[in-house]
Length: 58
Image (cartoon, rainbow, N blue to C red):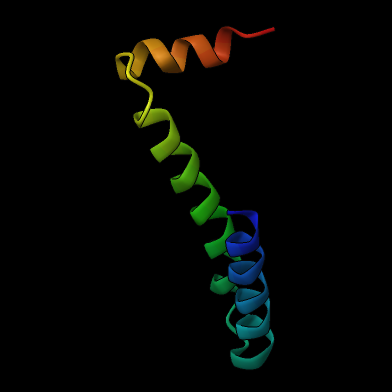
């Protein structure tokens, strides 16, 4: 999975330099956020309990 994130990041950096659009630099962060959100949703516990558990870890 990390290989896919590296490819997305490399393509976005290339697109940023080629097309001079800085919005491409947001795409890797969005893909990571969406990936983590999907992983949280896949936990068989209720969503809010899972989020509370993650943020209560010390």
